[in-house]
Image (tube, rainbow, N blue to C red; front, top):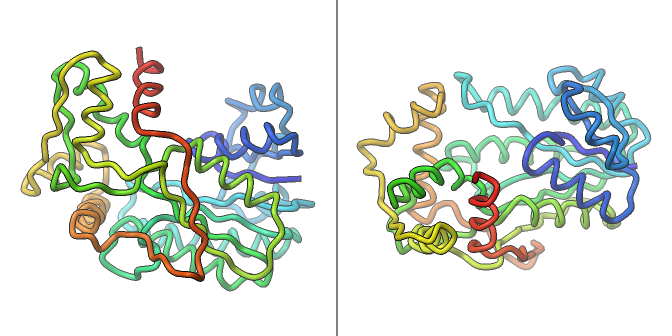
Length: 292
């Protein structure tokens, strides 16, 4: 039995779908019954648990061959790092109490660093906590999500402008889509290994904001140009997303980390490198099709 947390989110749903496509027994962990019927129709077992409750987490993991764990964003709180620490500790306690055999944790590019990464520090914290487990653990360090560009898709369609915190606009960074994360996690969950492993998941290629703008232009059938958001405007812009003041600062630090080249993959012979299959043009094309 393979247990998937975050099944209502982008990566959790992709992991569960990929496992089901491999004809595996899947148990999705939900917080409410909103999507329960749909998952049962796909052939998944459904349990309800909250990551604030170690007891329900433990029950959800019982008899699991492997667990997919992830940290939901907490952009509205004052201290997302304290929240991540608490979630990590509850995960580990539940894993120990339930007898889970192995774990795949969603992490991030840049998680090897203990500073200068903003939000990504949450996954560094989780890696540190999960690293204390005595069972096989895989840290899947994923590239920036292609799906994050959906937040500016409407403006791109209406105004032909693709606003970007990434600068310079020609600078390419690793980007991957959720479906590739799902396939990679599902593959890892069904493999056997010992100790800890780190998987660095690149996209099919690296892309710049200019490349993303070109993908939007092709999908929309209109001119779209990337425009850098001045750093002086970051605070006001990010605040409109509903982030707490502390989360605004963390997000800004993360973007500076990408732009300076501090947030990159670690690399090295001790790591496993995997490339996704999805090109940015395909991801943006699908995004536009789903929004129209």
